[in-house]
Structures are given as C-alpha cells and as structure tokens.
Amino acid sequence: MIEDVNPYLIQMLGYSREEFLKRKLWEVGAFRDIEASKDAFEALQVDEFIRYDDLPLKAKNGTLVNVEFVSNVYLVGNEKVIQCNIRNITERKFAEEKIQRQLEHLIALSAIDRAITSNFDLKFSLKEVLENVTKELRVDAADILIFNPNIQMLEYGAEQGFRTNSVKTAQVRLGESYAGRVAMEGRLIQISSIEDEPDKLLLSKFFKGRGFCLLLWRAVDR
Image 1 (cartoon, rainbow, N blue to C red):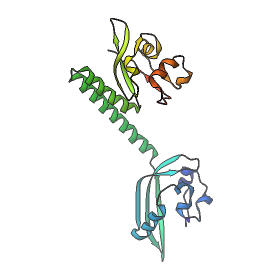
Image 2: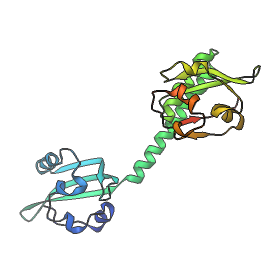
Image 3: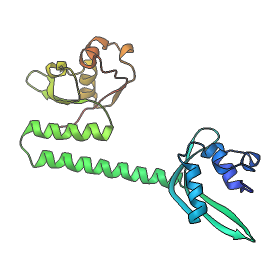
Image 4: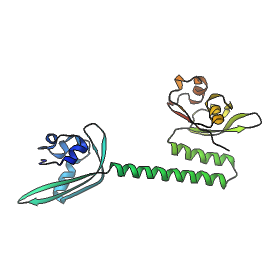
C-alpha cells in the first residue's frame, strides 16, 4: 500500500493525495497502463531494487510524462518499506529528440550533397535526394519537377512513393497550379484538403486513391 506521497508527484501527475494513499502503486491511474507492473513489483520485493530510465506515466489530464523511476526496498524496524524516487525527464527527453532530429537532418543533407557532387548521373542524384527528403519530412510520396527554360515549363524529373504514373507526365507552367506558383514565388504552400482546392481535378489525378490530407511543395534555387 502507498503510505505517503510528496507534493512534487501530486503536482506532476495531477492526482490528489487521497487518490494515491492506501492503494497499490499499479492501482493508481498514472500506472495502470504500464505492462506487467505487478510482476515488476514482485521482482522488486525479491531483488530489492528496480529502475526505469525512461518510463511514460499518464497524468490525470491524459498527457504522458516521461520519468526516471528508481525504487529500493529497505528495512524500517522489522518491516520492509519500498521507496520510489520519480524524476520528471520530459524536458531532457524533448532535448534529446530535438538533437536526434537535427543529427538526422545533417546526415540527410550530407548524403544529398555527396550524391550531387560525386555523381554525374542526374537520375541517381534525384533518387538520392527523394529518398532523404521523404525520410526527413516523414511523407509517403514526393516528386521533383525540373524547369525547362526552352518551353518555360516545369517537367517531371523524379518521384518516389506514387502508385500512379500520372505524375510522370506532369507539365506545369510557371505561376500556374501550386508547383508553378511555388517555383515562381519561392515560398511554401500547404494544402490541408484536396477536396476544398480549386485545383482539385489536377491534384486528384496525381493522388487518386492515396488518401492524402497534406501536400507540401517547395521551390529549390538552381
């Protein structure tokens, strides 16, 4: 049974002191979603120590709080007492994830740079760019349109992830449609719903059956 809880844990998880006391730890809402919590505490009674470096606890409002959880068993008189030390590591976890994303971004840029500078095969270079772009942006599909100055049109260069070949026949004038506008204006355009867009017929041709809800088009200076 939980005999006492400090104000720090009450504030962190949003449960009242009464909701903690006189219950087993796994009976408290914050711990209910942790698999095999009973087994872990049975092991604690045997080994007298248990540690989780990154344990997600659910606060009363439903948000997840990443914590470091260390528990020890020690004697008070003739009784065994379990002391649980819980430290909020959410900010540290966020910082680690941010650093990891930045590292992945740098690795992707480095791979793209190597592909462009060390290879004269345009198709290979574009394929390498798309592989890294789709991974970095976490998107299902992407394509590259190349500007043809002779006819003042954007034409198909490469694609990845599309289930239709329609994108390979794409030709877009500068300033027209979304790709043409992005190429001319040099800015990002975000589409939240194809169904609500004036270019619905053109977009549906390329993305039919894929269930897209978000599209990103970007211009790249040459």
